[in-house]
Length: 376
Ligand SMILES: [Zn+2]
Image 1 (cartoon, rainbow, N blue to C red):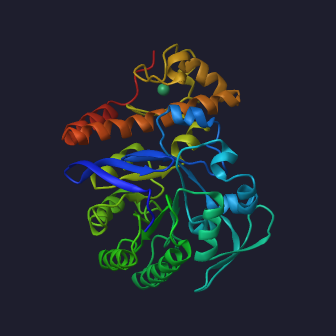
Image 2: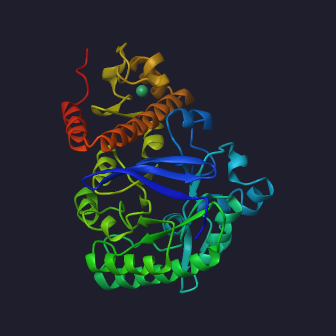
Image 3: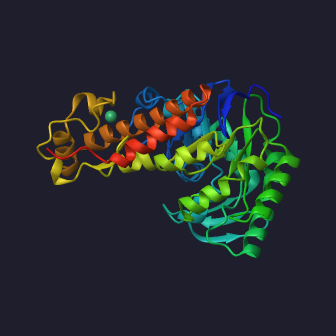
């Protein structure tokens, strides 16, 4: 097992947990939200600005980076941290999910996946061994085991076969990862919405032994109800003393519901992607700045928010730059959204540490149900 990487649980409240992941590149306060830096950048944000929103760790995408600019090139240029000017921890996914969702001419065998790049059609092979090599070349601090994200819905026998192959790939990932000081390898539980399969998957992963464990195969179209159903039992099947990561989640209420059910880490493109389409997430729900009602509104998106978009600009200005397709629109709204998501995480961490998660969640839900402020 890698050393120089550790997880300390500071407090629990119900099933919600707060703690700290320690890495040689800095601490990650949990529950943690990881902004997504797909291709070596959190779109529209400078790294210092991402840090200023409160992010302790970023996510990078193996699939995108292996195709462009290429993992070997990033390694020659000093690794992903130096390349993108982010010195704090980075988690990389295994590439498996995006191979299945973005590439063409895919062929999956026991060995791995052969596919054509969505960029130029070039042929590539991704196996557990190659995924570990790419993530090592990138210099990732938290490496994800190579797996197949079982599509949803999946018949029970299809899910079982997929999950068992992912567990064989998890073992190969562990063997290929080896022992790397200060770097962590996370295993990924699969099993779709089938409880026995989730159990079998958790046991298989624990037998191999990982530095952390992800709940995979969720947020793939099953909806919040079914996702929470699985989260009611799946995190509890994984070791208490290791971080638990829910991949690709989510909206603010998904995040809060996941933390309530024992999740420590999450990532999602939502705050950055929706910022680029004129959407702001606030304590009162979602605000579409493209909407004509904001054209003459001198008030900020959220008067209680301390981000630069809310401190320095009106809804009218944001409406104008969104409509005019000005770059600053994506920059300001991404900043606001990332700031708000990190504020949710900070609020939950504090509430859990004081044993007040339930009342914090009540406040969170009641403010959302009020809806956006009335038009002027
Ligand atoms: Zn703001």
